[in-house]
Length: 146
Image (cartoon, rainbow, N blue to C red; front, side, top):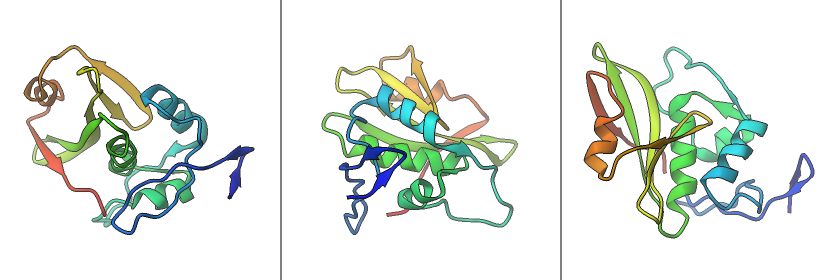
């Protein structure tokens, strides 16, 4: 097992190749995920010309990424947990993506979004309301690398 800043990592991020990644064993819900992201990762502004977002294991290795990279990382982790359902959305402003977030529903039915490393509760009851709450001119579901 690898060690990183004193934590032993056991958690799996499920990708198309099912590769073990470095997620602390104490990361078990959205709150501990937020705490881990905020303590270990930093935002790296979008690099012009880069089309694809980073794979989750690249975000972990680089200790950061842009908003879409974070959205895909949190999406991958949340979707591997029982009862969680998440998707990545781009929020468009004047025909450009202005921001990407991971929108998810907890097992108890409550809706939240991860915006980079911030966990934000949404006061909504349906997926449609959650998407509408994102704002922007247009909101589009975005693919994440497999």
